[in-house]
Length: 505
Ligand code: NDP
Image (cartoon, rainbow, N blue to C red; front, side, top):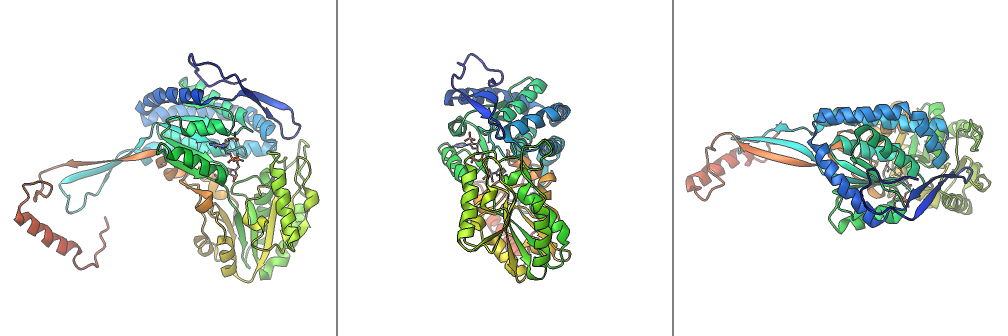
């Protein structure tokens, strides 16, 4: 049984819940259901720890984070095993996920100073007597609410960057992966010895309590519907939020694409992690000229892929039991409306596992094309040209990731897709590049983790204007003269009167 780290005299949580293996149903661990009072106590402890942590130099924080990174790396197999037990994902996939998170942690710790430290900015002609500078200061305590599908990579995109920026973090993992969240906080506690990162466990109420517990920002990753509830709770105290929500990502395959690579990427993007990936592939638009050839490669590959509980399995179970109904209803709706399953279908939905399912001839307004399925299913549609592919890709309220396979027009197509991230001739590659921001538009949310944007997301900009010498014209004084007004008018006419000069520093 786990407890909040460094617990003071506050009473122990009495209620507990079990985390279960989605493969066997066995109990993996028992965890407290932390009450609102306990969440507040955790945030209060984090507040003290945040003062200490923010007072350290960038180098000192980077050293602590680097030590933690080493601990996680040396215990990678242990962490991957726990991830496998709680989510059911194959051990190798868990290793890959954790490895990517470690890489991000290294980047965040190593780049925080360069991105956030005070830097001079031009003060402009009118204020030439001023030295202007800006620095990005930590917010204080950040609440992180995470999902179960990538229980390490996803929350660490917020946790690692928030810590590197000088904040303390209170993390509420999903009720399906509390053990993984607790493991992360425990190893951090062992490394740093202060409650700079704590975990609180429980259900939605615990997450809602975190929004109201006095945190300075909430970084939420989960469904769009829950994201709206998180925003509403945070609005009560004007707590800013980052929302990393769902997606309905498309792959576009152009006539000159490498079809073998495109099919391979499509299948992996749609079916890895059993399709439970926010930026997973759920739709494909293929140029008419290569559609038949692409389908033949894709279906052949898909028929070799199988989800089961065997040790060498490449696809695990559906982690959240109620998702089975969503997946089944999307396939049923597609078939009812004239679609065909060329691989899989309704029979592919078992008790705990869903087999790869490829749907064609599915109307664009059906559930399988419009709503997040979160299973190993994908719709493939024929398009007459790339104009149609782009228009259909953009005809969704989501806008998280996207993929383009094209030898000659990759950049041109990518720039016209309304999504936060696009991979060209690769799949979800943007997520593994620490210097790139990760996040979406529309119903996929807002705000960014990863990269310089991800560091700044957990800070506030602190601007300072320092007078270097007295101004030639005293403009901000009641002693301002008519002559100064006249001089100002003359300067403004020179600078901006023609309307054709664009000031660039
Ligand atoms: P949920 O929205 O169900 O839950 C996300 C987190 O919010 C969980 O920790 C959950 O706790 C908590 N929560 C639930 N209710 C509340 C509430 N009222 N107030 C505060 N917190 C609450 O999402 P899932 O866990 O099912 O994750 C899957 C979703 O996450 C998919 O839509 C997926 O696309 C998205 N996702 C987005 C990513 C991105 O970066 N854009 C990355 C990964 C996933 P509990 O589990 O205890 O209910």
